Length: 141
Image 1 (tube, rainbow, N blue to C red):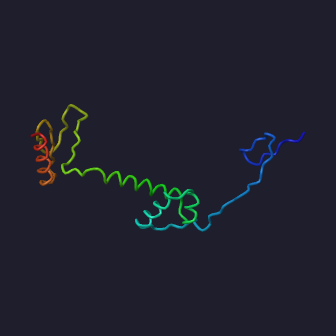
Image 2: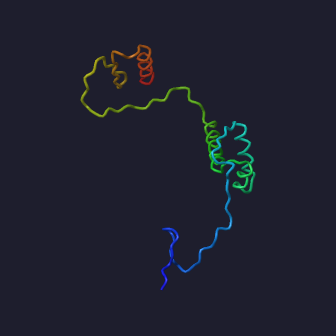
Image 3: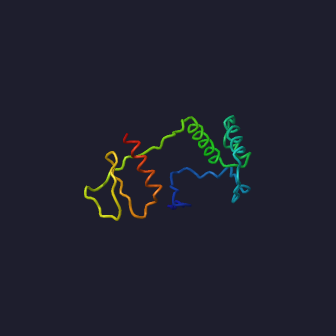
């Protein structure tokens, strides 16, 4: 009895003959090329892509990757959502929670404002310290 001949590690003998590949598409013109796209070009391609029935064919005609077109579309969607948000004038602060209950020794002073403790080292910039203390006073008031 003849042993089945496997051509790759993934082949199995299931009694179905292997079929030859019918179509191979070589994108030799796109290999190794890196282009820089302007914002106007990206927007134009994305808007044309949205009207296209076949995105893969559209991308081949313009010699651009389909993944890149989808990335540009996603970035445009994010930018449009961000433009809808109202800008915040006041700064946003995150409460700081210490990990240990015992104070660590340090060179400098401690200032408590409205329940928050700020440790100021000797090398701290004066303008930065004043800004932090003023911000804490405003939030405590």
